[in-house]
Length: 205
Image 1: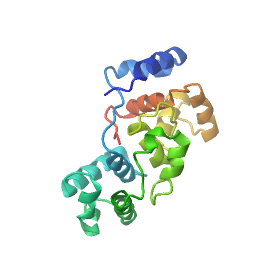
Image 2: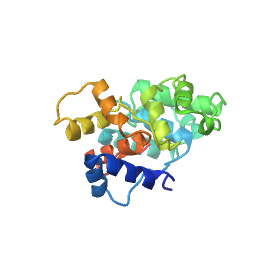
Image 3: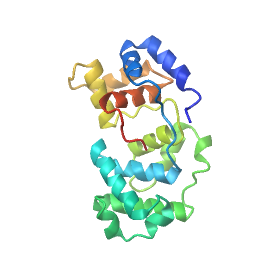
Image 4: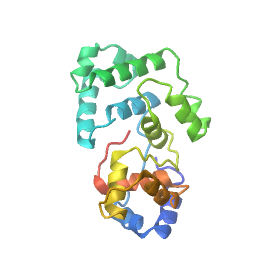
């Protein structure tokens, strides 16, 4: 289901930024949508850490084939070596198993997250092993559908910003942050379309 703010955000961004307006015109009739339960979103984000979109999709497909459905119970039924055989590193295997154990043991509280502010959710999530700010921001965008997240640690976002706004040149984080400030309070929407400009079918968490 399309976020209720999506069309309003698109109109505002198109008025403010002709570059984004052109990207949005090139990607009609598509929008951000929630893809799954909190555990699935977080597990998929862990899989995608520090690897390309193509590699992340390949590993994810193999992981789903291994566990059947991505639930804490299904993950915990598999031995670590079976998860590693899907293409997960030793560290990512540890992270996903730990995440499954925390969900299964009630050590995380996903029912509270929808009522918490963005930074509160991030602070809660980064206490989980293997979840840093980038993974928490992916969760905010793809599961909680928060409208104003700007994940500058994301390699794809940085590549798109350099391509479309800085003629491919290396650019400081501070400069990118200043550029993104003009898109508030719809920076998740701008980010999503910038990802689309690199790959029409990016990984969605």
